[in-house]
Amino acid sequence: MVERVKTGIEGLDKALNGGIPARNLVLVSGGAGTGKSTLCMQYLVNGAKMFKERGLYISTEQSDGELKKQGEQYGWNLWELEEKGLLKVIYIDIIKGGNFIEKTREAIKNFKPKRLVIDSMSTLSDYMAVTDYSKQSWSITTIQNNVIPQFFSEKLMSKKILTALINELKNFDATALLTTELPEQGGQLSADGLSEYICDGVILLYHTTIGGENFGNIQIRKMRYTSHQHGMFSTVINEKGLTVGEETTLIK
Ligand SMILES: Nc1ncnc2c1ncn2[C@@H]1O[C@H](COP(=O)(O)OP(=O)(O)OP(=O)(O)O)[C@@H](O)[C@H]1O
Ligand SMILES: [Mg+2]
Image (cartoon, rainbow, N blue to C red; front, side):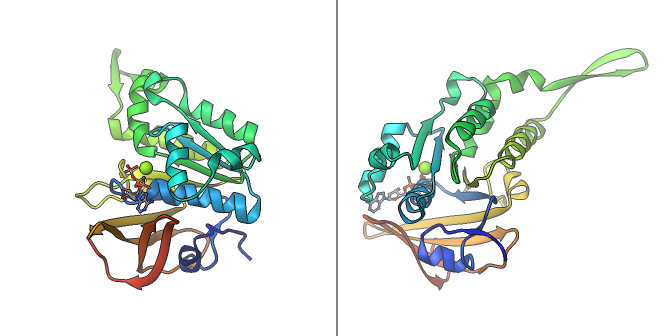
């Protein structure tokens, strides 16, 4: 039997045939404002409230305070969950530099979360430019006694960092959601075009606004170690957070 981690979002757990296989690293991919952060926060809030499981939210985009205010919009008291030791929200400013992977590793080691969120992975390519990794962006080859520096392409660098991060995360007992910006054009499922292959699962979010109300779709594009529904399901974001409804056709 596959050990599963329930998102606590009923329609999504149903589409996942019970939940995310434990310790899977899952990409949550979607355009701007599709509900990536909402879904991730809800996953941690539900884990804390329903199952008393510790959740760690590592943010590279919104500050600790901004995220808590966003949670308040959905009626979630993140301050209270933090006081109870069931939640930790950490903001890592990638512009300031420092080693993202090291900071992430330390935070996980200290808090020992069952559920982990990294929001967002898209900023990792920016991070690449300001950290030690940039110093490793070339190597030396010798051809007929000539020393030639060889520069790695940006894509290869991204792959190195992503692989390092994902391998690092696999060392821990956490089931993780990692967000990424889905480009409007093109056939990729993530900002970098690589994460979808490296991660264990991919959940896609789409959305549209009609008459001031948000309507959207969610689709499980990939989930290792389980069977799952492959179709599109409707989503609504309201004052209670994100709800997953019936199987539907794509609304764009
Ligand atoms: N209380 C609410 N009721 C209804 N809709 C809301 C409420 N709060 C937020 N929303 C909607 O939910 C959307 C999703 O927000 P969220 O921050 O989760 O998306 P995101 O995909 O993480 O966005 P970004 O690309 O900026 O990171 C918002 O754009 C907003 O339209
Ligand atoms: Mg977000």
